[in-house]
Amino acid sequence: MKFEDFLSPAQEQEIADAIESAETGTTGEIRIHIERKCPDDPLHRAISLFDELKMYETKHKNGVLIYISIDDHKLAIYGDEGIHSIVGDEFWNDDIAIMVSEFKKGRYSDGIKEVVKRVGEKLAEHFPYEGGANPDELENTISFGDGK
Ligand code: CA
Image 1 (spheres, rainbow, N blue to C red):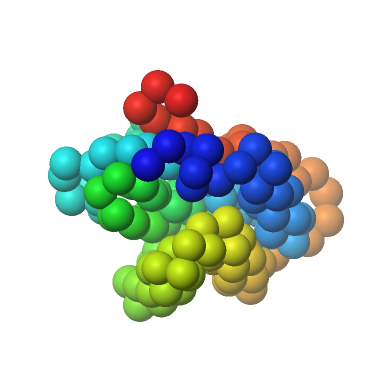
Image 2 (image 1 turned 120 degrees about the vertical axis):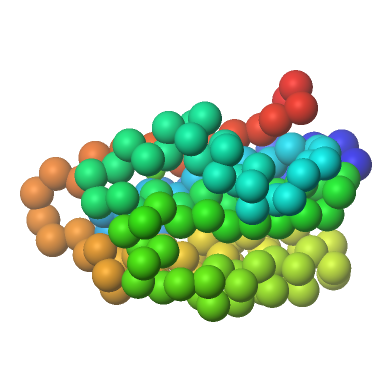
C-alpha cells in the first residue's frame, strides 16, 4: 500500500492537529510512526523506535508511541513507564482493538484520531496540565519509515 492511500496529506495534518489538541490538557506526549513493512514483532519494533525517536526525553516519562505497519497490518502502542505503570496492557489493547476495527472499514484516519483522543484523555487524567510551561517535548507530525 502507498502511504498516500493510507492517509492523504490533509488527513496527515488533521492527525497532527489532533495530537496538538490532545496534548493541550496534559504534560504527556503522543507520537505516531508509520512504515510499510514490519518483519518483527510490532511491539519490539515500537520499543526500538521509541528509543530511536528519543521518546524517553519527557520529564514525566509519559510519551506514547502509536506504531503502524501498513503492508504487514501490524499495530502496537508503547507507553513510557510513567503512563504504562498506571494504565497497564489492557488500556493499550483496547486502543489497538479500536484501530483494528476502524482500519478494517478503511477508516484509517478516523481510527487513529479516535485513539489519539482516547490516549490524550487518559494522559490528561493522570498527567494533567496545571499551568506554567507545557513545552511540546516531542513533535506532533507523523514520523514515516521506509523512505517516505
Ligand atoms: Ca507533541
